[in-house]
Image: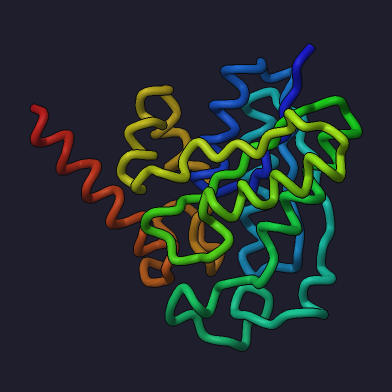
Length: 215
């Protein structure tokens, strides 16, 4: 039976990927893998666990707090202010998560991982498909599996488009209620001014405007 591993933060985008993987592979054949890197928004980990419990998906958590020892940023140091996306870039985080989750996937017989990266409206150098293609090449060598995939189904979408997708799958309202997107860890509406909250608010506005236009 085919399996998949989803890198699952407990935020909106990775949870949409979890829903997509569950539809394709079935909940019993998907693993949600969350990473505790001592991030200031730890509430996202509890959100990931709750979503998996509600959806009947196996949830695992890996500790990678070593990131605090090798790089410094506002997501791992609460004394730093969050003013822009540059403050929240955790150098190498997505690459590390891709590598560790792929090793885990290989160990359970899964030949793909999902990552909920956005490459259009998010200014992080490790969120592009180009970056993931390079990671995928290395992982195929590491795992001795030329067909191994890093799936990034949202990478070419705007935030509004991801919300439309969630709505089409019938999970949008649930995810708006239960995910944590805010970099300060405030659930639902969030803090309102961190980069993640600003992107989410703009996406919601565009999504709602498109619904009004269609009606």
